[in-house]
Image (tube, rainbow, N blue to C red; front, side):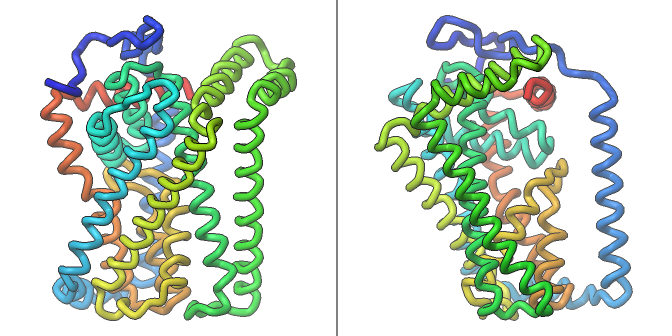
Length: 376
């Protein structure tokens, strides 16, 4: 069927192998994964203990359950629909990054790989991040390294967007309903400016790589000559792949489309959050700047991925709402769970159905993610 992946590998456009047999080493079987599992378990237990110590004894489970019954389902449906649109927006943005290598990429293939890839993130944690670029490399018959570079470019674009949103929101803390002391208020405002400066520096680095790619590559490799040959070769591959992934930004049209799709992506995310807050009685009068502050904190909480949970953002959501905006813990916890469903779980039924339709083996996808992670 169209877009499905056969068991054997497929050739790329230069005739080299791209699939699971494309020179990937066996999945690493060492103690590192057990350390990560142990650290994840400790983090979860610590978070549960902190929540129990802070609110556990006074937590009203009846109010928590009743908050779901009082939801405005029209706003909730709108939020879920906007959440799904963000995944389609990611497929459109990836098509822009893919065009230098594949002039006419299939949007359906990209959306399918995106849905399956984000489902893998929910189910597998960090190793699932690498499923999407791998599937795109197979479906569109391009090299895996180029799609890893595209994934890195996507992450940089999102980091820039999050930094700008977060920085702008924090500079407006003085005008928000956030209840913080003068010292913390100064820290948040200063942090907002610092985040904006960091975003500007990242943007400058992207521009340098875009306009002076060959010069930057030679300078970077020259600065890394002190590394042992094995590490130097790995760094050279990573830098070359990054340069290849930056090809989409070297034309004015490609750079403009990348900017516009990133802007569209984060407008959709902001609207998704806005609709979700409107669905909750007691939170439906939150002004936009307060929602952006919450969104900025939550976006940074997404850095930590926990298999089956999706990240540390639930705890961040509860802490920000209760400590900064004095939202009752029952209502804050309810919103955090619903936010997790809207932003993570909503794509899982689509990802699972598409993976079953195309005959994917989830055990193999898990091992694949670990293989690619070992190379990164």
